[in-house]
Figure 1 (tube, helix red, strand yellow):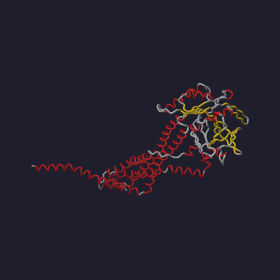
Figure 2 (cartoon, rainbow, N blue to C red):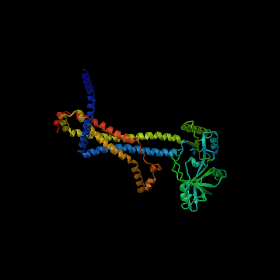
Figure 3 (cartoon, one colour):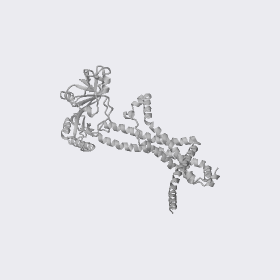
Length: 480
Protein backbone atom coordinates (compact mmCIF):
# COMPACT_ATOMS: atom_id res chain seq x y z
CA UNK A 1 0.00 0.00 0.00
CA UNK A 2 2.76 2.35 0.89
CA UNK A 3 4.54 1.66 -2.37
CA UNK A 4 1.39 2.19 -4.30
CA UNK A 5 0.94 5.56 -2.66
CA UNK A 6 4.49 6.57 -3.55
CA UNK A 7 3.94 5.58 -7.19
CA UNK A 8 0.68 7.47 -7.21
CA UNK A 9 2.35 10.58 -5.85
CA UNK A 10 5.17 10.30 -8.38
CA UNK A 11 2.68 9.89 -11.22
CA UNK A 12 0.77 12.83 -9.90
CA UNK A 13 3.90 14.95 -9.93
CA UNK A 14 4.72 13.77 -13.39
CA UNK A 15 1.31 14.65 -14.67
CA UNK A 16 1.60 18.13 -13.20
CA UNK A 17 5.06 18.58 -14.62
CA UNK A 18 4.14 17.43 -18.11
CA UNK A 19 2.20 20.52 -19.26
CA UNK A 20 5.06 22.80 -18.13
CA UNK A 21 7.46 20.75 -20.18
CA UNK A 22 5.21 20.93 -23.20
CA UNK A 23 4.82 24.66 -22.78
CA UNK A 24 8.57 25.05 -22.64
CA UNK A 25 9.05 22.96 -25.77
CA UNK A 26 6.25 24.69 -27.68
CA UNK A 27 8.16 27.98 -27.74
CA UNK A 28 10.89 26.70 -30.02
CA UNK A 29 8.57 25.47 -32.81
CA UNK A 30 6.69 28.77 -32.61
CA UNK A 31 9.94 30.74 -32.93
CA UNK A 32 11.06 28.55 -35.82
CA UNK A 33 7.71 29.07 -37.52
CA UNK A 34 8.00 32.87 -37.32
CA UNK A 35 11.60 32.73 -38.54
CA UNK A 36 10.52 30.71 -41.55
CA UNK A 37 7.71 33.16 -42.19
CA UNK A 38 10.18 36.07 -42.00
CA UNK A 39 12.61 34.32 -44.32
CA UNK A 40 9.87 33.57 -46.84
CA UNK A 41 8.65 37.19 -46.64
CA UNK A 42 12.11 38.57 -47.39
CA UNK A 43 12.51 36.19 -50.34
CA UNK A 44 9.11 37.18 -51.72
CA UNK A 45 9.96 40.87 -51.49
CA UNK A 46 13.34 40.37 -53.16
CA UNK A 47 11.60 38.82 -56.17
CA UNK A 48 10.51 42.37 -57.05
CA UNK A 49 13.42 44.54 -55.80
CA UNK A 50 12.45 47.74 -57.60
CA UNK A 51 8.86 47.62 -56.37
CA UNK A 52 9.95 46.86 -52.80
CA UNK A 53 12.59 49.62 -52.92
CA UNK A 54 10.06 52.23 -54.03
CA UNK A 55 7.71 51.19 -51.22
CA UNK A 56 10.55 51.45 -48.69
CA UNK A 57 11.40 54.86 -50.18
CA UNK A 58 7.91 56.12 -49.37
CA UNK A 59 8.27 55.16 -45.71
CA UNK A 60 11.84 56.54 -45.66
CA UNK A 61 10.64 59.93 -46.90
CA UNK A 62 7.81 59.97 -44.37
CA UNK A 63 10.02 59.14 -41.36
CA UNK A 64 12.78 61.53 -42.46
CA UNK A 65 10.20 64.28 -42.98
CA UNK A 66 8.92 63.90 -39.43
CA UNK A 67 12.42 64.18 -37.96
CA UNK A 68 13.60 66.94 -40.31
CA UNK A 69 10.55 69.18 -40.04
CA UNK A 70 10.43 68.92 -36.26
CA UNK A 71 14.19 69.60 -36.07
CA UNK A 72 13.92 72.66 -38.29
CA UNK A 73 10.92 73.95 -36.33
CA UNK A 74 12.75 73.40 -33.05
CA UNK A 75 15.83 75.21 -34.37
CA UNK A 76 13.83 78.25 -35.48
CA UNK A 77 11.92 78.26 -32.20
CA UNK A 78 15.05 78.08 -30.07
CA UNK A 79 16.72 80.85 -32.06
CA UNK A 80 13.66 83.09 -31.62
CA UNK A 81 13.47 82.36 -27.90
CA UNK A 82 17.19 83.03 -27.55
CA UNK A 83 16.76 86.44 -29.13
CA UNK A 84 13.88 87.26 -26.80
CA UNK A 85 15.83 85.98 -23.78
CA UNK A 86 18.67 88.32 -24.78
CA UNK A 87 16.35 91.18 -23.86
CA UNK A 88 16.29 89.84 -20.30
CA UNK A 89 13.56 87.72 -18.72
CA UNK A 90 13.43 90.10 -15.75
CA UNK A 91 13.57 93.27 -17.84
CA UNK A 92 10.77 95.69 -18.66
CA UNK A 93 11.36 98.01 -21.62
CA UNK A 94 9.55 101.36 -21.79
CA UNK A 95 10.14 103.12 -25.10
CA UNK A 96 9.32 106.52 -26.52
CA UNK A 97 7.10 106.47 -29.60
CA UNK A 98 6.40 109.51 -31.73
CA UNK A 99 2.63 110.15 -31.81
CA UNK A 100 0.92 109.98 -35.17
CA UNK A 101 -0.95 113.24 -34.54
CA UNK A 102 0.38 116.78 -34.26
CA UNK A 103 -1.10 117.35 -30.82
CA UNK A 104 2.19 117.41 -28.94
CA UNK A 105 3.43 120.91 -28.12
CA UNK A 106 6.67 122.31 -29.56
CA UNK A 107 7.74 118.88 -30.72
CA UNK A 108 7.92 117.51 -27.17
CA UNK A 109 6.75 113.93 -26.57
CA UNK A 110 7.73 110.64 -25.04
CA UNK A 111 9.41 109.68 -21.78
CA UNK A 112 10.95 112.29 -19.53
CA UNK A 113 13.53 112.47 -16.78
CA UNK A 114 10.62 112.93 -14.37
CA UNK A 115 9.20 109.56 -15.51
CA UNK A 116 12.54 107.92 -14.80
CA UNK A 117 12.82 109.40 -11.31
CA UNK A 118 9.16 108.57 -10.61
CA UNK A 119 9.61 104.90 -11.52
CA UNK A 120 12.78 104.59 -9.45
CA UNK A 121 11.24 106.20 -6.36
CA UNK A 122 7.78 104.60 -6.41
CA UNK A 123 8.40 100.98 -7.43
CA UNK A 124 10.57 99.19 -4.84
CA UNK A 125 10.67 95.93 -6.85
CA UNK A 126 12.94 97.59 -9.45
CA UNK A 127 16.55 96.50 -9.07
CA UNK A 128 18.15 98.54 -11.87
CA UNK A 129 16.74 101.41 -13.93
CA UNK A 130 18.48 102.62 -17.09
CA UNK A 131 17.64 105.90 -18.81
CA UNK A 132 18.72 105.65 -22.46
CA UNK A 133 18.86 108.32 -25.14
CA UNK A 134 19.54 107.22 -28.73
CA UNK A 135 20.51 109.50 -31.64
CA UNK A 136 21.67 108.84 -35.16
CA UNK A 137 25.05 110.36 -35.91
CA UNK A 138 28.31 110.29 -37.82
CA UNK A 139 31.58 109.19 -36.24
CA UNK A 140 34.94 110.28 -37.65
CA UNK A 141 38.59 109.58 -37.02
CA UNK A 142 40.97 111.34 -39.38
CA UNK A 143 39.76 110.45 -42.89
CA UNK A 144 37.61 107.48 -41.86
CA UNK A 145 33.95 107.97 -41.06
CA UNK A 146 30.93 105.80 -40.33
CA UNK A 147 27.22 106.26 -39.62
CA UNK A 148 25.85 104.74 -36.43
CA UNK A 149 23.96 105.27 -33.18
CA UNK A 150 24.91 107.49 -30.27
CA UNK A 151 23.67 105.63 -27.21
CA UNK A 152 23.74 107.78 -24.07
CA UNK A 153 23.26 105.66 -20.96
CA UNK A 154 24.57 104.71 -17.50
CA UNK A 155 27.23 102.23 -16.26
CA UNK A 156 24.63 99.47 -15.73
CA UNK A 157 23.84 99.32 -19.45
CA UNK A 158 26.56 96.75 -20.22
CA UNK A 159 25.37 94.20 -17.66
CA UNK A 160 21.67 94.61 -18.41
CA UNK A 161 22.13 94.23 -22.19
CA UNK A 162 24.74 91.46 -21.75
CA UNK A 163 27.60 93.36 -23.39
CA UNK A 164 31.19 92.36 -22.61
CA UNK A 165 34.48 94.18 -23.03
CA UNK A 166 36.92 93.25 -25.78
CA UNK A 167 40.41 93.03 -24.31
CA UNK A 168 42.30 92.54 -27.58
CA UNK A 169 42.93 96.31 -27.80
CA UNK A 170 44.37 96.53 -24.27
CA UNK A 171 47.92 97.83 -23.77
CA UNK A 172 50.16 98.07 -20.74
CA UNK A 173 49.16 101.69 -20.27
CA UNK A 174 45.44 101.42 -21.02
CA UNK A 175 42.81 98.79 -20.29
CA UNK A 176 39.38 98.69 -21.90
CA UNK A 177 36.51 99.65 -19.58
CA UNK A 178 32.89 100.75 -19.71
CA UNK A 179 31.37 103.96 -18.41
CA UNK A 180 31.66 104.64 -14.66
CA UNK A 181 29.75 106.65 -12.06
CA UNK A 182 32.58 109.19 -12.04
CA UNK A 183 32.14 109.72 -15.79
CA UNK A 184 28.46 110.41 -15.14
CA UNK A 185 29.04 112.78 -12.22
CA UNK A 186 31.65 114.86 -14.07
CA UNK A 187 29.94 114.81 -17.51
CA UNK A 188 33.12 113.53 -19.10
CA UNK A 189 33.63 113.39 -22.86
CA UNK A 190 34.35 109.67 -22.81
CA UNK A 191 33.00 107.05 -25.18
CA UNK A 192 32.99 103.27 -25.63
CA UNK A 193 32.98 101.81 -29.14
CA UNK A 194 31.02 98.85 -30.45
CA UNK A 195 32.99 96.15 -32.25
CA UNK A 196 32.29 97.17 -35.85
CA UNK A 197 32.86 100.87 -35.14
CA UNK A 198 36.29 100.06 -33.69
CA UNK A 199 37.21 97.86 -36.66
CA UNK A 200 36.21 100.46 -39.28
CA UNK A 201 37.62 103.56 -37.60
CA UNK A 202 40.75 101.85 -36.28
CA UNK A 203 41.76 99.03 -38.66
CA UNK A 204 45.31 99.31 -37.30
CA UNK A 205 46.47 99.89 -33.74
CA UNK A 206 44.38 100.41 -30.65
CA UNK A 207 41.57 102.95 -30.37
CA UNK A 208 42.05 103.33 -26.60
CA UNK A 209 43.07 106.89 -25.77
CA UNK A 210 42.24 108.21 -29.25
CA UNK A 211 39.68 110.95 -29.80
CA UNK A 212 36.68 110.31 -32.06
CA UNK A 213 34.62 113.13 -33.52
CA UNK A 214 30.97 112.38 -32.74
CA UNK A 215 28.87 114.90 -34.66
CA UNK A 216 30.56 118.18 -33.58
CA UNK A 217 32.32 117.07 -30.40
CA UNK A 218 35.39 114.99 -29.60
CA UNK A 219 35.14 112.02 -27.25
CA UNK A 220 38.05 110.04 -25.85
CA UNK A 221 37.81 106.26 -26.36
CA UNK A 222 38.03 104.37 -23.05
CA UNK A 223 36.79 100.95 -24.12
CA UNK A 224 35.67 98.59 -26.89
CA UNK A 225 32.84 96.05 -26.65
CA UNK A 226 32.76 92.59 -28.18
CA UNK A 227 30.36 91.70 -30.96
CA UNK A 228 26.81 90.98 -29.80
CA UNK A 229 24.08 89.46 -31.94
CA UNK A 230 21.15 91.77 -32.73
CA UNK A 231 18.14 91.56 -30.44
CA UNK A 232 14.71 90.53 -31.66
CA UNK A 233 12.41 92.92 -33.44
CA UNK A 234 8.91 92.58 -31.98
CA UNK A 235 6.00 94.57 -33.28
CA UNK A 236 5.96 98.33 -33.21
CA UNK A 237 7.07 98.65 -29.60
CA UNK A 238 10.40 96.87 -29.96
CA UNK A 239 12.45 97.34 -33.09
CA UNK A 240 15.30 95.00 -33.92
CA UNK A 241 18.39 96.42 -32.23
CA UNK A 242 21.84 96.06 -33.75
CA UNK A 243 24.63 96.77 -31.29
CA UNK A 244 27.53 96.66 -33.77
CA UNK A 245 27.40 100.34 -34.86
CA UNK A 246 26.99 102.01 -31.45
CA UNK A 247 29.03 104.52 -29.51
CA UNK A 248 28.21 104.70 -25.80
CA UNK A 249 28.56 107.96 -23.89
CA UNK A 250 27.38 109.11 -20.42
CA UNK A 251 23.77 110.25 -20.60
CA UNK A 252 24.55 113.22 -18.36
CA UNK A 253 27.11 114.37 -20.93
CA UNK A 254 24.49 114.25 -23.67
CA UNK A 255 21.95 116.12 -21.57
CA UNK A 256 24.53 118.81 -20.75
CA UNK A 257 26.26 119.20 -24.13
CA UNK A 258 23.62 118.25 -26.72
CA UNK A 259 20.32 118.71 -24.89
CA UNK A 260 16.90 117.31 -25.70
CA UNK A 261 16.21 119.05 -29.00
CA UNK A 262 16.76 117.19 -32.27
CA UNK A 263 16.51 119.16 -35.51
CA UNK A 264 16.11 117.25 -38.77
CA UNK A 265 16.54 119.08 -42.06
CA UNK A 266 15.76 117.46 -45.37
CA UNK A 267 15.20 118.97 -48.82
CA UNK A 268 11.81 120.62 -48.58
CA UNK A 269 11.16 119.67 -44.94
CA UNK A 270 12.15 120.73 -41.44
CA UNK A 271 11.26 119.08 -38.12
CA UNK A 272 12.14 119.74 -34.50
CA UNK A 273 11.60 117.11 -31.84
CA UNK A 274 12.15 117.38 -28.11
CA UNK A 275 12.82 114.01 -26.51
CA UNK A 276 14.37 113.66 -23.07
CA UNK A 277 14.61 109.86 -22.82
CA UNK A 278 14.33 107.33 -25.66
CA UNK A 279 13.97 104.28 -23.44
CA UNK A 280 13.86 103.28 -19.80
CA UNK A 281 14.95 99.71 -19.11
CA UNK A 282 13.91 98.31 -15.73
CA UNK A 283 15.20 95.10 -14.19
CA UNK A 284 13.02 93.51 -11.54
CA UNK A 285 14.60 92.21 -8.34
CA UNK A 286 14.89 88.47 -7.78
CA UNK A 287 12.52 87.28 -5.07
CA UNK A 288 12.73 83.65 -3.97
CA UNK A 289 9.55 84.00 -1.91
CA UNK A 290 7.31 84.73 -4.92
CA UNK A 291 6.79 83.40 -8.41
CA UNK A 292 9.31 85.24 -10.58
CA UNK A 293 7.13 85.34 -13.69
CA UNK A 294 4.10 86.58 -11.77
CA UNK A 295 6.27 89.18 -10.04
CA UNK A 296 7.64 90.55 -13.33
CA UNK A 297 4.17 90.74 -14.88
CA UNK A 298 2.80 92.50 -11.78
CA UNK A 299 5.59 95.09 -11.90
CA UNK A 300 4.93 95.62 -15.62
CA UNK A 301 1.30 96.43 -14.88
CA UNK A 302 2.40 98.86 -12.17
CA UNK A 303 4.84 100.56 -14.57
CA UNK A 304 2.15 100.86 -17.23
CA UNK A 305 -0.28 102.40 -14.74
CA UNK A 306 2.32 104.83 -13.36
CA UNK A 307 3.36 106.19 -16.76
CA UNK A 308 -0.18 106.36 -18.12
CA UNK A 309 -1.16 108.85 -15.40
CA UNK A 310 1.21 111.48 -16.80
CA UNK A 311 0.92 110.78 -20.54
CA UNK A 312 -2.31 111.62 -22.31
CA UNK A 313 -0.79 111.01 -25.74
CA UNK A 314 0.00 107.59 -27.14
CA UNK A 315 3.74 108.36 -26.98
CA UNK A 316 5.14 105.34 -25.16
CA UNK A 317 5.06 101.54 -25.40
CA UNK A 318 5.94 98.87 -22.88
CA UNK A 319 7.56 95.59 -23.91
CA UNK A 320 7.86 92.73 -21.44
CA UNK A 321 10.25 90.06 -22.81
CA UNK A 322 8.79 87.52 -20.38
CA UNK A 323 5.35 87.87 -22.02
CA UNK A 324 6.95 87.51 -25.42
CA UNK A 325 8.83 84.44 -24.23
CA UNK A 326 5.63 82.83 -23.02
CA UNK A 327 3.99 83.57 -26.37
CA UNK A 328 7.01 82.11 -28.18
CA UNK A 329 6.75 78.89 -26.19
CA UNK A 330 3.07 78.58 -27.05
CA UNK A 331 3.81 79.31 -30.70
CA UNK A 332 6.54 76.67 -30.61
CA UNK A 333 4.07 73.99 -29.57
CA UNK A 334 1.65 75.01 -32.30
CA UNK A 335 4.48 75.14 -34.84
CA UNK A 336 5.71 71.66 -33.91
CA UNK A 337 2.16 70.30 -34.04
CA UNK A 338 1.60 71.83 -37.49
CA UNK A 339 4.90 70.55 -38.90
CA UNK A 340 4.31 67.13 -37.34
CA UNK A 341 0.91 66.98 -39.02
CA UNK A 342 2.43 67.77 -42.41
CA UNK A 343 5.09 65.09 -41.90
CA UNK A 344 2.46 62.58 -40.75
CA UNK A 345 0.65 63.04 -44.06
CA UNK A 346 3.75 61.86 -45.91
CA UNK A 347 3.87 58.81 -43.63
CA UNK A 348 0.25 58.01 -44.44
CA UNK A 349 1.05 58.32 -48.14
CA UNK A 350 3.85 55.81 -47.60
CA UNK A 351 1.38 53.51 -45.85
CA UNK A 352 -1.00 53.74 -48.78
CA UNK A 353 1.92 52.72 -50.98
CA UNK A 354 2.41 49.62 -48.82
CA UNK A 355 -1.28 48.72 -49.12
CA UNK A 356 -1.19 49.21 -52.88
CA UNK A 357 1.87 46.98 -53.29
CA UNK A 358 0.49 44.28 -51.01
CA UNK A 359 -2.86 44.20 -52.85
CA UNK A 360 -0.99 43.81 -56.10
CA UNK A 361 1.08 41.05 -54.51
CA UNK A 362 -2.06 39.20 -53.39
CA UNK A 363 -3.40 39.29 -56.94
CA UNK A 364 -0.14 38.02 -58.38
CA UNK A 365 0.19 35.21 -55.83
CA UNK A 366 -3.41 33.98 -55.86
CA UNK A 367 -2.42 30.56 -57.22
CA UNK A 368 0.35 30.27 -54.61
CA UNK A 369 -2.18 31.01 -51.88
CA UNK A 370 -4.49 28.30 -53.25
CA UNK A 371 -1.68 25.74 -53.28
CA UNK A 372 -0.69 26.56 -49.70
CA UNK A 373 -4.26 26.30 -48.53
CA UNK A 374 -4.67 22.95 -50.40
CA UNK A 375 -1.68 21.37 -48.63
CA UNK A 376 -2.88 22.40 -45.18
CA UNK A 377 -2.03 26.05 -44.54
CA UNK A 378 -4.55 27.80 -42.36
CA UNK A 379 -5.98 31.25 -42.85
CA UNK A 380 -3.93 32.65 -39.98
CA UNK A 381 -0.78 31.36 -41.73
CA UNK A 382 -1.67 33.27 -44.90
CA UNK A 383 -2.55 36.36 -42.85
CA UNK A 384 0.70 36.29 -40.93
CA UNK A 385 2.67 35.76 -44.16
CA UNK A 386 1.41 38.93 -45.86
CA UNK A 387 1.32 40.94 -42.65
CA UNK A 388 4.99 40.15 -41.97
CA UNK A 389 5.87 41.27 -45.50
CA UNK A 390 4.25 44.67 -44.96
CA UNK A 391 5.94 45.04 -41.56
CA UNK A 392 9.32 44.18 -43.10
CA UNK A 393 8.82 46.96 -45.65
CA UNK A 394 7.87 49.47 -42.98
CA UNK A 395 10.74 48.40 -40.70
CA UNK A 396 13.27 48.84 -43.48
CA UNK A 397 11.85 52.23 -44.43
CA UNK A 398 11.66 53.33 -40.78
CA UNK A 399 15.27 52.35 -40.05
CA UNK A 400 16.56 54.17 -43.14
CA UNK A 401 14.34 57.15 -42.31
CA UNK A 402 15.82 57.43 -38.82
CA UNK A 403 19.33 57.29 -40.30
CA UNK A 404 18.40 60.02 -42.76
CA UNK A 405 16.83 62.08 -39.97
CA UNK A 406 20.03 61.97 -37.91
CA UNK A 407 21.86 63.63 -40.82
CA UNK A 408 19.56 66.65 -40.65
CA UNK A 409 21.90 68.98 -38.74
CA UNK A 410 25.20 68.28 -40.60
CA UNK A 411 23.52 68.31 -44.01
CA UNK A 412 21.73 71.60 -43.25
CA UNK A 413 24.97 73.26 -42.12
CA UNK A 414 26.81 71.94 -45.19
CA UNK A 415 24.05 73.21 -47.50
CA UNK A 416 23.97 76.63 -45.83
CA UNK A 417 27.74 77.07 -46.04
CA UNK A 418 27.65 76.00 -49.67
CA UNK A 419 24.98 78.58 -50.48
CA UNK A 420 26.99 81.27 -48.68
CA UNK A 421 30.02 80.34 -50.76
CA UNK A 422 28.32 80.33 -54.17
CA UNK A 423 25.54 82.90 -53.53
CA UNK A 424 26.98 85.32 -50.94
CA UNK A 425 24.91 88.36 -51.96
CA UNK A 426 21.58 86.51 -51.91
CA UNK A 427 22.38 84.90 -48.55
CA UNK A 428 23.41 88.26 -47.06
CA UNK A 429 19.97 89.67 -47.86
CA UNK A 430 18.22 87.00 -45.80
CA UNK A 431 17.24 87.77 -42.17
CA UNK A 432 19.94 87.12 -39.59
CA UNK A 433 17.78 84.46 -37.96
CA UNK A 434 17.63 82.39 -41.16
CA UNK A 435 21.36 82.78 -41.77
CA UNK A 436 22.30 81.47 -38.33
CA UNK A 437 19.51 79.02 -37.45
CA UNK A 438 20.53 75.37 -37.09
CA UNK A 439 18.14 72.41 -36.86
CA UNK A 440 17.85 70.91 -33.39
CA UNK A 441 16.91 67.24 -33.24
CA UNK A 442 13.83 66.62 -31.13
CA UNK A 443 14.81 63.47 -29.23
CA UNK A 444 11.33 62.03 -28.90
CA UNK A 445 10.64 62.44 -32.63
CA UNK A 446 13.06 59.61 -33.53
CA UNK A 447 11.35 56.74 -31.67
CA UNK A 448 7.94 58.26 -32.41
CA UNK A 449 8.54 58.34 -36.17
CA UNK A 450 9.92 54.78 -36.14
CA UNK A 451 7.01 53.40 -34.12
CA UNK A 452 4.49 55.17 -36.36
CA UNK A 453 6.17 53.71 -39.45
CA UNK A 454 5.86 50.19 -38.01
CA UNK A 455 2.28 50.84 -36.97
CA UNK A 456 1.47 52.06 -40.48
CA UNK A 457 2.96 48.85 -41.87
CA UNK A 458 0.66 46.83 -39.62
CA UNK A 459 -2.45 48.94 -40.21
CA UNK A 460 -2.09 49.16 -43.98
CA UNK A 461 -0.99 45.55 -44.23
CA UNK A 462 -3.97 44.06 -42.38
CA UNK A 463 -6.51 44.46 -45.19
CA UNK A 464 -4.37 42.87 -47.93
CA UNK A 465 -3.44 40.05 -45.51
CA UNK A 466 -7.07 39.35 -44.60
CA UNK A 467 -8.09 39.52 -48.25
CA UNK A 468 -5.43 36.94 -49.10
CA UNK A 469 -6.57 34.65 -46.28
CA UNK A 470 -10.22 34.86 -47.32
CA UNK A 471 -9.59 33.59 -50.86
CA UNK A 472 -11.43 30.38 -51.72
CA UNK A 473 -8.74 27.68 -52.20
CA UNK A 474 -10.56 26.09 -55.18
CA UNK A 475 -11.03 29.42 -56.93
CA UNK A 476 -7.42 30.32 -56.13
CA UNK A 477 -6.17 27.12 -57.72
CA UNK A 478 -8.16 27.87 -60.88
CA UNK A 479 -6.66 31.37 -61.10
CA UNK A 480 -4.37 31.99 -64.06
